Amino acid sequence: MTDNQDSYITHLESALDGTELPAGVVQTMHNDRPLWVRYDLAALRKNVTRDALADRTAGMWRYRELLPVESDEHIVSLGETMTPVLKCDRLGQQLGASNLYIKDESRLPTGSFKARGMAIAVSMAKQFGIQRVAAPTAGNAGGALAAYAARAGIECYLFMPADTPIVNQYEAALHGAKVFLIDGLINDCGRIVREGKEPMGWFDMSTLKEPYRIEGKKTMGLELAEQMHWRLPDVILYPTGGGTGLIGMCKAFDELATLGWLETDNRPRMYACQSSGCPPIVNAFEAGERFAEPVTDARTIAAGLRVPGAVGDFMILDAVRASGGKAMAADESRLKEWMSDACELEGISLCPESAACIGVLQRALAEGEIKPNETIVIFNTGAAQKYVEVMKVDLPMIDHTKPIDWTAL
Image (cartoon, rainbow, N blue to C red; front, side, top):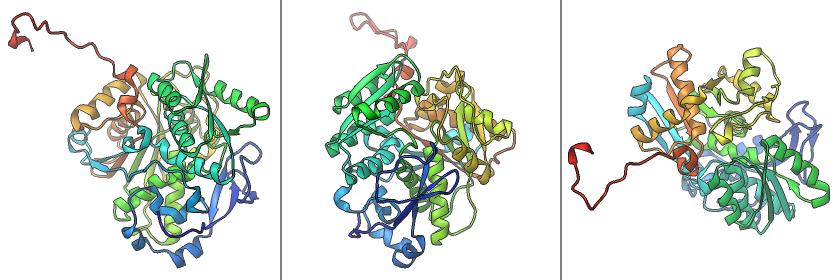
C-alpha cells in the first residue's frame, strides 16, 4: 500500500453506449450492460511515476492510484502477492515455442486469480456500507468472495451448480458463507441471485454486474507489464469464461499507454481460450458477431469455463479483435492431458481452465497463427489441487508384508 489516501476515480461509463454515471454511489449496470471505471489519468501522470513503484510492497495494492478504493481504511486484503512469471522451456520445447512463460496466479489467497477481483469488489462494498452480498459461482469465485467477505465482516450467500468442484464447496462454507447447491448451470444460479435481491436485500456480486471486480483483474496486466520491464509480450493466452481477466488486462494496457509507462506501443494479441464443451465466445468470433448466443448444453471439467452466456460477451470480443488475436476452443477430451503436461514438465500446478490455453497454443502454432519465437504468456488462473475430481488417479498398492519386486516398480 501507499501513503496516498486519494483516489483518481472520476466516474463510471457504460461499456456499450458510453453513458456516464457517478462513482460515489452504488452502481450495478446500465441498461443491463457492464460499466467501466474511469480515472483522471492526466492528473495521475503528473503526480505518480512508474519509478515510484519500486519502493512499494509487492502486490496488487502497489497500483493504488489506478484502483477505485477511496481510502486505505476501506481496503480488505488477505496479503495478495505479486505472482511469478515462470519461463517454461521444457513445455515450450514440447509445443514448439522458444519463449513460453506462465504467470502463476495460483499463489494468491484462496488459490486463484479470483482473489484480485474480490479484493477490490469487497473493499468497495465495505466503502459503500454494504452488509450482505450474494453471487452465483461454479468454482473459485465463490471461495474468494467467501474469504474476503469474512475478512470484511460482510454476510455472504453463494449459489453453486451441484457439480461444482467439491473443494470450492467446502472452502466457501468453511469461510462462513451460506452455500446452496443448485441442480442446474451457473445461469440458473444467477437467476436465483437476481430474484433474491429484493426479498433478501443483498448486493449482486455476479461477474460484471458490479463495476469493480474488473479493476482487480486489471492488476494482472499492470503486474505483467512491470515484471516484463514495461515491454508487453507478443501473445497472451487467457482461459475465458466470464472474461473479466482478459477485459481487465486490455484496460490496464490502455491506461498504461495513456500514462506513458510502456516502453513500446506494441500490444499483445489476446487469445480467448475456451473448451469445445462450452465455446460461446468462440462461436460468436467465428461467426463475426459482437454478441454471443448462449450454449445450451455446456459440459467441461474446467468449471471456470462453463459459462454458457457471458454478460460481457461484447467486451471480450471487442478486446480480442482490437488486439489482433482470436477466440479459439481446445478439445475438451484433452484438457486433463494438457494439465498433466504442465505439471509434469514444469512443476506448475496448472488448472484445467488454463490447460485449454495449452491446447489453443498447440493448435495456433501448428496453423502458423503464433510464431515459435514470439514471447508468449499463458495465465494459470488457479491451482490444480482445487480440482480433486479432475486430478483423481488410481494408484498402485504395495503389500508391505511381502517381498517387493523392484523390477515391477
